[in-house]
Image (cartoon, rainbow, N blue to C red):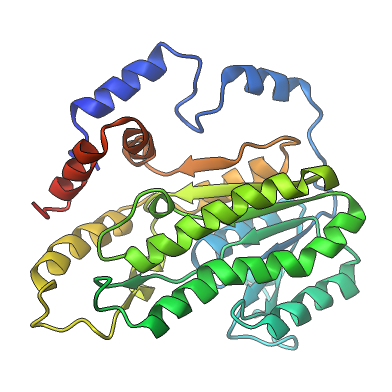
Length: 320
């Protein structure tokens, strides 16, 4: 988003140059120094559950953690307990795939039971399963909005509710919810998606406070644009048609968004951040990751006058 913020980005960068904050994760230096003196949590046989691990962020995280000493279970809707990756494939050597549909409470319960039966514990959960529906709010069917929330929001709650009794028993655990920059900035023509991520943000903030007494860490990751199958898998609402009053706007904005996604960062960067968070005894509430200008955009929204931000946002996507 190089052209979106202009002098505003310059002002933000100048602020950080003369402050005690770091541009990578906006974490005060004093906390970094303190963390360097703390003993890292060992990853010996830590048991990890990652939802939506068949592609994108989930697969990148499962491969990376599995290759670095974690015992990883990745979920997919298109597998069963008897089916495993082809021998010799990276998936076969890095993590186990189990069936789970986060929209179905019974499916989630069976998946968690399977892991606990085999391992006796779950140390890390990465709630990554998600979908994106594109279209104007007026034209998106309620069933499409509900499906968006069932996966992105209620799915995360189902998984949390299923693993928390065991984590409380252990008096430890780490839950990482994959949100989005779209969870702090309402993306035009992706309103249902943004709404589901906004909901995930609020739920995570509350859950984090509720679980502190039990030694369970809860964290948000807010990715910008990354090069994954997210673009290919985006669902265009059935209510959209060539004669829609929103056709010109959507056909202008969506290709720009898709171009940024195709030119996005490597999802392995997010996998590295997930590993980093699992080793932090006292992680922050949220970590924004992606291109510098996109990370700065969240600060721009927070600090800029709302009408100035809105106008800049619309101008960038050629909606003015």
